[in-house]
Length: 95
View 1: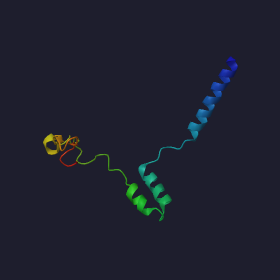
View 2: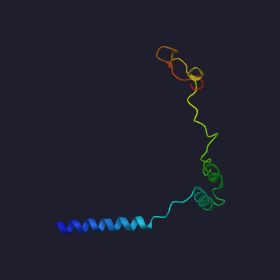
View 3: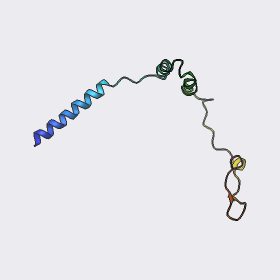
View 4: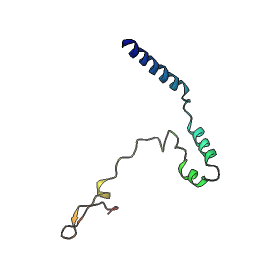
């Protein structure tokens, strides 16, 4: 029984190693975008234009700390009773 278990474990490890050896190396964003463009050709050019947008550079905008949430006074609205069982729950912009 012990030999069967050991043989099974070795077979699984060999299979996992073979699969890991066959996986391709990671590709860059530019390579992926060019492959998507080649696959889209003229049939899907609109979809490609809308969805395959390269990410912004790593530095971002200005390189400073990210902006915090807006001040509460600019968006908060008190809940209000409109009618019998109808209440307003929202913000100043979304209601």
